[in-house]
Length: 478
Image 1 (tube, rainbow, N blue to C red):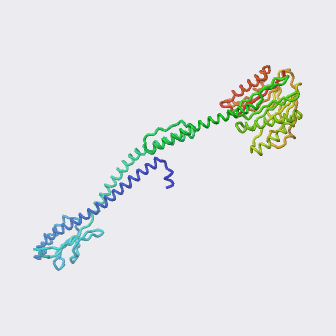
Image 2: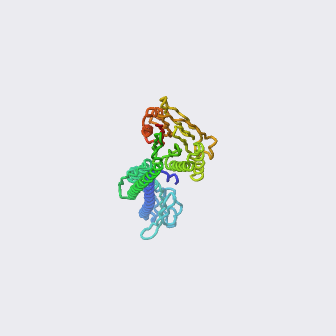
Image 3: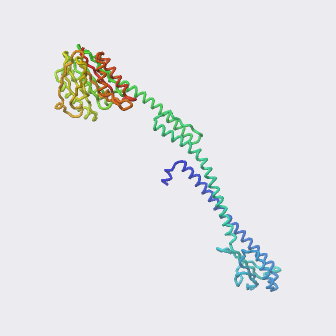
């Protein structure tokens, strides 16, 4: 039964139609066979009894006048009845008077007896109103067996024909039930696969399946409406989140002697990239970072880092080195990521401090720093060594300060890996070489134009939807 439940609805309908038809037909044939057997046996009893009456009438005078030869001749007429296997006439003393076949020696009791394979009939013989003897006939049931065999042959032919007709009708009628259900099933799979709630199933009749299709279509309509509301609410929330995130990013980069600008293009509504600019006495703090992944969680961590960066700038006011600064920032980041957010994400970041004389000291683990040297017309590539933020509680032992000096016309370019790891449809990365070429070509432009042009080039390099945030900061000594 469990196997039957797993069959397709078409198979179930076909099986149900065929079994119902077959059982109904078998019951009908069995009833007809039983009725025919009973009625035919009654007919045989009646015929044998009638024949016994005729024999008794014809032999009554022979018994009355003790004419055995005439009685024997009367029994000889039964040769025309092959199913009569024994016949006898008895006198009034129940003694055998004339016989044909294997008849009993004395007269049996009157009446009709039906045994397993024959019928016995005994009737009294009267002459002029007085009983003069008994007539006895025995008939076999071969005719009944022949009739049953013919009935079985006919029933077999009828059964085969009925099965073929039932199979054709079942195949025809099951389609009226299974076809709309199959359409409904295909629509359900398409909706599940494509998330397209505009799909509708056309009903074919106003039956229960039609009501089911109406309910399915109505459900899809409600889901589509609710989905649109959820998407709209999500878009509004993400627009608000993006507005909040971008509002905390610096809008101006005012530092005498420098042209500074930055840009961030998030892969989703909320990005995980970070940049910051804070003026201090005689210089400024710069920061560029990238939280692993992108989206809401990474954006939240990015805003947390920005808040901590701002707080450290306000508290220390430049009285720490970049390595000390980033070590303090890591302690707070590590605690919040593990204890409060329960996240195993981390963040790459480089923190730099520049002064009015062009000296830039930096620390942290991030992508390579590129510096265009105006004097030689070449781009210098400097690795940023250290440990990612959020990986360990104390990164001070592996965090050191490094310093470079920017001459007039030099351009320092910070970037996130969303720039160099952008891939086109052939799988080719934008890579450091292209970034270096763009910086060398754009070094004479304003810092805002440098970061914008490079960001657009990297963003357009992505095949399809960008998979990572793209951020850049250019520091140009003017």
